[in-house]
Length: 116
Image 1 (tube, one colour):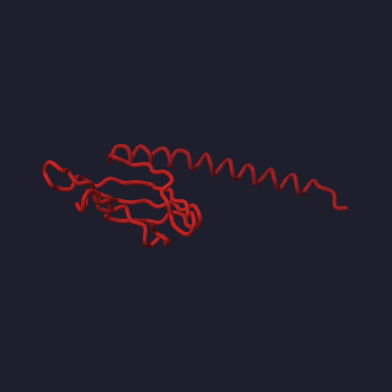
Image 2 (tube, rainbow, N blue to C red; image 1 turned 180 degrees about the vertical axis):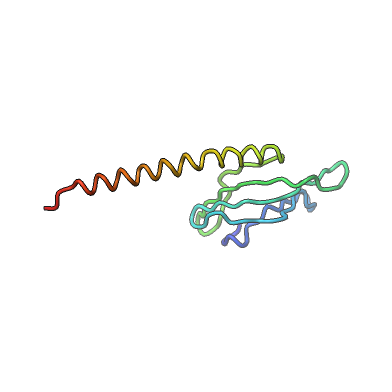
């Protein structure tokens, strides 16, 4: 079990054979609940060669001093990754506009309060 984020890896061995190898790792969030993104390859057992890289977003929870995997999402193709990126890019301006609107409402509400 990994006690630090640096120790976390996406490598996986089956009967002593590396069947999933981590190529890169990015820590997105730290703390008791950590989110990491991995670039990895899986072994094609028939050919003995590693397949094209894939991505995974993995949530870990620190429990009794060790990180444990809680959930994950695998991005299995470039098409899917581009679709996710397009959604993020179309939603982010809406989220930012909503946040700005809420901030404006908070300022209006606080300026209308009487000091007592």
